[in-house]
Length: 320
Length: 293
Image (cartoon, rainbow over all chains, first blue to last red; front, side, top):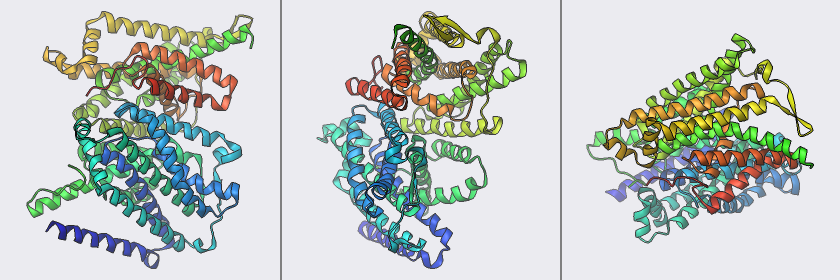
């Protein structure tokens, strides 16, 4: 029964991916921009959720890794004259290295001190990008990156983003449900008990931090490929609000929560928040309501409703 | 650098340190008792600066600063009470990350509320006549207003020390820092105490905002700018310790002042580097409290 259910939900996701792949045939061009933004933000937020939801680590450095990935694309084009696409394979080891080094530093502390350390380290990266004019063009950013011909046309760029994003999401999913992922949940639930069980807590946390940073950089690289630009504000610490919102809206204790959150967030951004100049107020208020009223996010509420219909407790996926 | 220049630069650093101390002491006090890192502390500081700007515009600069400081402190404390009762109190039993995210929501809300009320343009606030200009110092000149900030910071520090160490409220606060459950057990209304501590922290942020207003452009973005430096101070000094806030503020303020002189673009990087080094050696800061399990 359980296996069947798992099989069924896999079919649902394959179906959704197929619908997404057919997007350019039924969406207008402007809607493809929206859809691409959803895909990129979903990947970014899902990578952060490996830390936030699964391991219980609050990081304010995730925007920095996203920005570094975007700059990898922009800088190989700007300085080496390579195809900007070379920035994508470059962003992966770069994000991994940066996340590993900063993670090793930040993980000397725990919980709140850890969160503050990630904030400090990410601001350090931001200041470097912002100030190093000769290399990054400073606060001007790099715009108008030339993409290879096969990416011309919004549909082609969209398909490219979708393909990379789906592969990355599958990889993240495999990690999340692996024994390694289960160990992360154990750490979130009780660090001490996890340690007694023989889990090297710091090492697992560092691994999770590195993996999350790597995928964030990949998402940033996709952003630069699709939008053809990179600018320092991508790395500013307040940018972390975007994936955090998405995770909270969608639900942090489910793997697919951030994907649902990304859809809701982008649509919200383009409807409600786009109509007013006070979008921060609205997002802040929504954040407060979620934290105070439904900390489980939309997916959590959805599962409760479904469970009530089925008259059985909701099956919990990553959460213990 | 001659000795004279060195002294002037040192004084400028101490003035910055004074401001940072008032802000960080509030942040640290709230953390010590409530174990909440208030990301919105910088927003309260910004609110104080804007309130002060309005008061000074209303009553004129001759005596404007005194009522401005009082009104800013009281109003911001009231906002603090609203935040504590309306939001944080509901989250004490929840995971710390939800508290952090809630105060982050407050940051976003206050930023837009300030923009709605005061608009996006910067304001400048005139200092009272007797605080304008400079005095001679070691052959150079030094702004009187910077001395004034140092004086206020010293007064705030002394006041805070007296409250924490010489009053019954302070005794409760010190007990809450160690063990709030035990404190509740002996009959203290801890919930009310938390509200008072948060209001006190907010008032300090409001005072700092009002004090800084005449020496800087009052504008949006003040919140983020100060909170990052205040974090640096509290991380170096250690969260929850007033002494830590004092030492941390002195270090960051002076590093700031000399950093700008030596390598203007890298001044901020110096601070973060110092922070990383301190934490690498002592993860809870120089005088910090370890996290409660």
